[in-house]
Length: 232
Image (cartoon, rainbow, N blue to C red; front, side, top):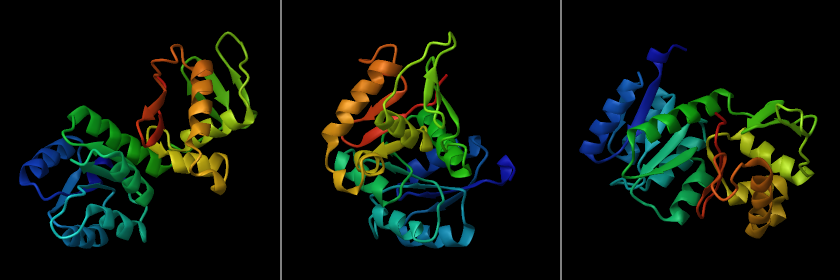
């Protein structure tokens, strides 16, 4: 697929924001499809099968959350929520309904562009955890369960720490909710035990981050989850 052939569906009821999004997405060389209601958006998603969707939650006919749920029933298209709702519960609900990322309004053009590219790479499979991952100075071999730097120095990570890194790496650049991390690392019965995550993320940062108090790679999405940033 060539860059010029990519299509983005924008479901947003505010004309001014649609105009801004259209301009930004055209600069990213997307073909832009617009809808101002949930019903039109769902219909457009089925008709045009876009490569990316940007969805507002506050739509006039139905909540945008329902758009995500309905589209997820038949499509894995990357979905970025762009909403004025900044409540953590809304972010968690959107992500667990199937959104790939969540950006609060007002938003910056560079942030949106970066999140779009991450979502597309993840959709194409580039975000999946491979045999090797770089976090700062550390090269992590997820298969051999080894962590070394350029000087050959080794670093011990526990099995749970490796599993946490692996799950985050499968969604690199995207936020992973507390519940998803807990279920995939500790099992279904641990989905409310967020203190496990706090303890282990603190341990991981102390090992992998040059300044654990100001992490560059293992990032917190307050009240929502964690995000593994791509290394420089």
